[in-house]
Length: 126
Length: 107
Image (cartoon, rainbow over all chains, first blue to last red; front, side, top):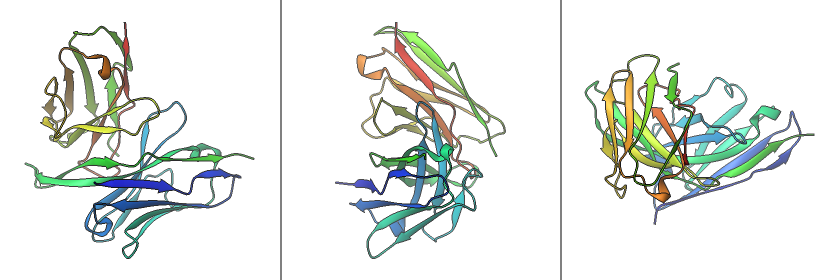
């Protein structure tokens, strides 16, 4: 069974740091595009960061320079290191596999998040 | 960044109804458009990718259409388990932005 399990959430003071983990089973993290998505309380989904199979990384403007996405291939685990946390970073954080589909008519492959974890809650508050 | 705008933000419907949700991109994204369903307290689930391809295991009452900037998610014969929030997401460029969501509520 393909499964993603997020851990590491909790209550943290503004300005603090936290590292989230996403342990994968049934899929190989290093062979896939892996993404972090968050959802603030009562709000919609916000794309946060992606790491490509080739290890390139991209971030939302809202977290660029503060968050770092990475992976440990030996542990088959995805991470999100979050520094300089702010109240507006309070959210449920989901990891997801960004599956690769066929190549579309613009020459790019289709990507879609087909496997999600249950999420871990981060609360930034004093 | 490509902005995604969904309408309506919420709607009321009854079991058996046909429901249509629209999603508009701020620039052309061809058909690099995905739809997700999210129920309260749960992770999102993929419904449709590449604008109109049904994810495995998703009931055929769900369908998607569109290309360029305008897209539609249609739910035929709405079932009790379909009351949820629906999100579109573009996968044409990074950041892979989501729409703000459409909540489908029971009338």
